[in-house]
Image 1 (cartoon, rainbow, N blue to C red):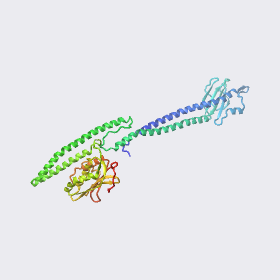
Image 2 (cartoon, helix red, strand yellow; image 1 turned 60 degrees about the horizontal axis):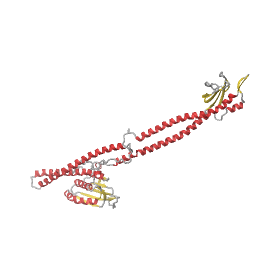
Image 3 (cartoon, helix red, strand yellow; image 1 turned 30 degrees about the horizontal axis):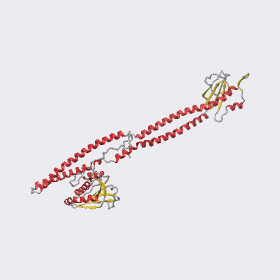
Amino acid sequence: MSDAPADTTSLRRQLLIFLSGSLIVMIVGATVITYFVAVSAANGAYDRSLLDPLRDIADHIRTDGRGARVDLPQKALEALVYDHLDTVIYQVRSERNEIIDGAAELAAPPSVPLGQHVFFDGNYRGAPVRVAALHASNGFIVQVGETLNKRNRLVREILLAELVPTLLIGAASIALAWFGIARGLRPLARMRTEILERSPRDLRPIAKTALPAEISPVVDAFNRMLDHLREASTLQQRFLANAAHQLRTPLAGLQMHHELLMRRKLPADVRSELERMHSATTRAAHLANQLLALAKAESAPDQGRPLQVIDLMTIGDFAARDWFSKAVAHKVDLGFALEPALIKGDPLLIPELVDNLIDNALRYTPAGGAATVTTGVHDGTPYLSVEDTGPGIAVAERSKVVERFYRIPGTNGDGSGLGLAIVKEIVDRHAGVLEIGARDATRGARVTVRFPPAAGAAQKNSPA
């Protein structure tokens, strides 16, 4: 399936049309030339056979009191003009162009010098004939003509002998051209596959290994464009990270001052306003932290940290300690069912992924609900799953919640709409699969991340 416009031209098709058209023109030209050569060769071969009966008849013309005549027995004359494929006729004319003997239907020859002979094409009873005419030394003009059956057969044989190999060579040339063009375009196909397999954040230059010289300028231009995009993306990420980092400190200080003030005895209206300010500061600090996490997740792959073998069970164990008090504050029963699951991942981004999934589960699970973090291996694939008893995510919304700053309309909670966007970026960086589903038929959500297994690591299956 191709999404190319209908009017897009194919380089392969253009080359094949040009080569095929050129071959057809050359084959037609060669056929025409071969035809004329074959006609000339046939005439040259068979014209000479007309000279013997022509001279024999001219040598046996006698003149006496009864006039001029051919002095040969009838059987001898018939033998002279006999041919098993063609009809052979003769004619004798006087110097005054009077027909003395032979076929009267044969037209008069062109002017022939005395003692010379000529060959020309004529017509006899509606059929084309080849005629030899001799102006004998005794003044008589003798003509011998024959139909063209032998000549046409020889022309056909010569044409077939020439045309069949030419057509075979032409067909073989088109086939070789097809495979040659396909092989020549293979680097383009490889380059297209490489580009399509990249993530939108992968702006590394395209390798020029084994590329034809004609494609190299295009690749150079494309790599220069990627350089500009990478610089722009790096500047954007750097600005986002710096801004988020600079915001964290004053926001943390402001949050601390709010908490200190709230410990004092304050009038009810002042405390209410202070609580709203504290809630807004908390959300702003959370947003700054998530923006910083998003900047880290979006960093270019070639600028990231080297991947290491990580056990998801260990990451889940650390998360259990970090999130216990927050789960208690949200009045959510946070449970962990952890089994070993080895992956090759970024040691800073994987914990960020787990934290965002747990944070989302706690924010959208009502008080008294439950959330569970599970790690393990299923069918050789390591996975991490977080499920909750919250409102769940409708099927129509599951492709949208991974977009930045998108929140499901009408959803309670104070999220910023960045949690699953960060998770999606980290999953893509690790060539994983993000699955968003339901916990059960009535309520809840389940977010599962499946990772490629760490190379060489022994994995033990556990329930999915």
